[in-house]
Image 1: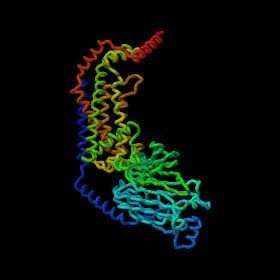
Image 2: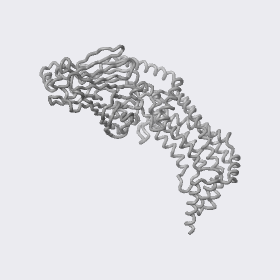
Image 3: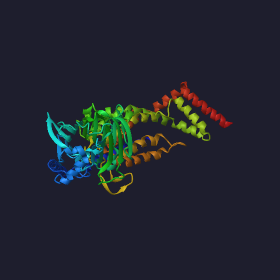
Image 4: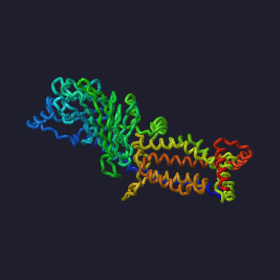
Length: 616
């Protein structure tokens, strides 16, 4: 009778959860006014992007002051400081390189990029995505000259020359010591491409640059905030690099870190969903990397997540420099980065480590891309969840079968407990003997959970880092790669946040009912074991707190996954498994002679010896 009541309660709870979901769907459907307002906002955004393309951007900050070229005294002072490179006339200004996806502004002073903007992406508050802007980046070569000067190209003026190579735009910037002697930065941008070819070379400077003294490439950047939660974005903002024959390493994401490595193929300054990458055709011999964490707590106004810096040596051969490199300014998207297979940039994506990363990269990412190409993002997640759970249903069946066997044996185990309540060791020994005769393993219910761990962790990395989910709405969630908000709080709850997300609430309710059907009923508390009822309540509560600031797509997956698992378990319980047949099978197993393996025999002997010592 109690079992039937629990079945009815489970079904009622299952129906109530779906009722809550349907009610929330109905309550949060967009009104015609909201749809019209959203369309108007999109039109306004399109107009602002067009205006931004023709508007002069604010001057670069934190640069060395521009030289007043009309001041002859200042010009003379500048030339005396830089020696032979004073041949190039100081000319202030910038040159723009752009294609369909990328907008770059290069300063004539220093020859480096002072602005890099994504044309097809905006931040959470509808501002164009900038990777470099307002002096957040610095790039320069530090070298010694034969007249005992130490110069940095950040202080040199370059002479620009714009040409084309087919459909490609080519910008050459030369810091000259004579008409045919110069240090050149050469940029080449292709149509509809995020990769920019970048070459540093010198000509006729063998008597200017000191041979034997190091030339150092210094590159630093403060990562600009792009997401609603700076703490969440900062968690996936990391300096990653390829070294020592395609070994991928990362600096710490949560604290200051520094590393010195060898044979550097590329360095990625990742900003969660966007990356600034410097790659070389021939690896740098060494690289000194630092990452400084700038985020202490959640903030709605702070604009930077981390501060990166790299020091890379350039080899001088015969007094000349020559280094072929590439700049990547674009999304941390597997579909885009896979186009640069020869550079291996796709490895900069945080798929996860080991088997988990392999599942994420080669199973879930292409699988979701396939579904997402045909369906809305949220529906694609639901379909993917259903298919994953159906694929794992044999594991669920094995787990529930083990629980059912344990439940059938429960009266006999209880009887043993009463009979041997004063002898815990003998009780344990007889219990294990009963399990052996019945052909039941108490650990068999745990094995399916371990088999599901790779799936669990792979999905845990997939949802927060999948570019395909960025800014994709579903129901009340504006962005499936970020948290959904149904209520803003006037205060901040530690570890929870200043908002209420609905998907984690639904996921927590679903996991509570799932645990009630499994842990709560079939695993009673035993002496020395954790209180399973306490865990049953603690787990959903922890999930509610933990996932409140996580990607809503992840919470949606866990909600749907647990609901499907509950449904599968109800079907297995009510239509597939028969307790009477299970009981009869266990009784048959008891009659069969049970052959012990070496481990079981050893365990029995140890327990018998312990029992004998106790009696003595």
